[in-house]
Image (cartoon, rainbow, N blue to C red; front, side):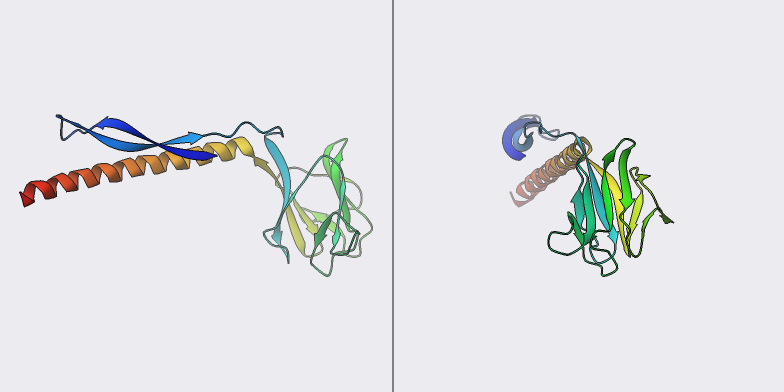
Length: 175
């Protein structure tokens, strides 16, 4: 995404005999992405990996302890087994399965013993680490970004207007 500044004539309400040149922010949107608008992720909300985010695809992967080649998502906690749980997309949507780990796997605080369906907002416990299953919505993010830019442009326009008024007032009093 890029921004361009354009000069545009905007009538000044206080000075009807002329117009002011004011910069206008124009947002150049990037071309649409080829991937889907919604991307599922696992976000670490508790544990040694707090704040880390892991993108989830449609293929299954193994969550485990940080060991070379033993898992696809490596967690730092010592109470996580090398191959702790398998996460993936199955017949019932996203699913998780404990792989016989020492400390077990929980979904929303309940220990699971078989394949368990996962929904957005579910909290997955892997040892002391808690992962939140979330979906990142690109469209929602773009709308929020555009709203922020629009608010900034409005604020910049207001500041420019106030500056022009103060400048005229100063010019009038210094003459």
